[in-house]
Length: 128
Image (tube, rainbow, N blue to C red; front, side, top):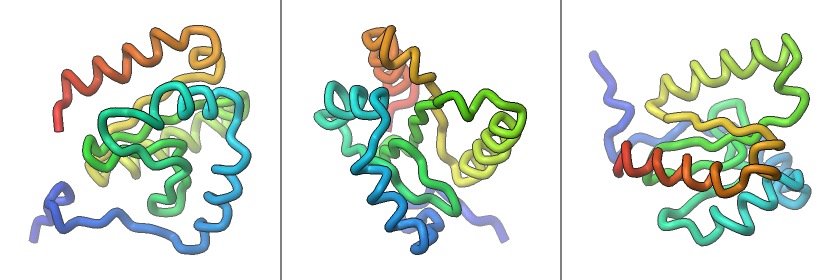
């Protein structure tokens, strides 16, 4: 039996225990997350959800229409443990048919136009 994860009736697995933590993260976004949200994704052409629980993870930004996750990586992502965790997390999320775009805090804060152009370019090459 094959399961088409991209069918319209598919719902991503969701851990209700993460809802409160996701709400906290929305209230306490990092400067980079806040910049990307307030200056670009809040008024994006497709609906974007902030701090969205998917499976046992909370992703920074999720666009259901495009099935894309946008992650903003801080310093913890650059440790060996952080990189191993990110690889596993990416593998699991991609298993649901999601595409992952990653940026560093520094890229968002210091190369903002480039980050926005990369997101827009991704949409043009992966239309809904």
